[in-house]
Length: 290
Image 1 (cartoon, rainbow, N blue to C red):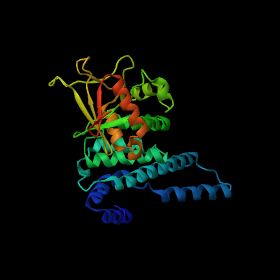
Image 2 (image 1 turned 180 degrees about the vertical axis):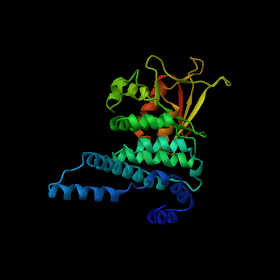
Image 3 (image 1 turned 30 degrees about the horizontal axis):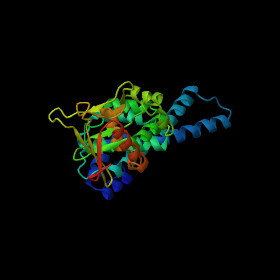
Image 4 (image 1 turned 90 degrees about the horizontal axis):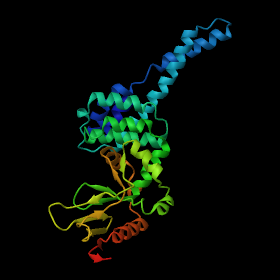
């Protein structure tokens, strides 16, 4: 561990120190001095009219690219420190996972995407085994515009009361034009489905159904709002819940994106209530029937 990294780890706490110890093998600087001296020699030989070794030239150019990639990995690794929890267990991260992670992370140059990768790394340290290889692969081939779109639809997710469940409530099959105003279209949703982040069914709707109780009741929370929805009594007490839901990988990505994207706007909240009521569901907000 370098002196700079050691001081950084000490100032950040034990979890960060352990974290840096685990990832340092992936953040070691290449021998930049070799490149500097090599470039000097190439310049001096050119000035003196001497023949330049093409193999040396190719080697140094390739090494310069490697330095850039190492810097990206280092930037992502250091950004991850701010998202570590005191209970993090970085020593339990699978070594093959780290190899795979940094092999993909070295190619990420967009600062916003680097931040997502940093959060993924921290999340894996916080909960070893949570971030799958398939999610890392998905993000490595994901365009920035697709990442933006994922953040866009995350505004339509509501958390279930008393559980860790998150439900993506998008009723696009019957309200296509309304969602188009928010930049949400079936084709864009299908792109995220192909990436394995969501599942879509535009012909039918996903439903909530309590098999152990004749009346289905679903409770959502949004800030200080508590939304209670009762199932359609004319349809076996089912609650139709739109055409889109998160996959396991989609939910893991949702957990690490910025909280501002996940804030449920009042306009979306009212729209969602309207959709539930149009599906013959009884709706209460903070114990007041709507």
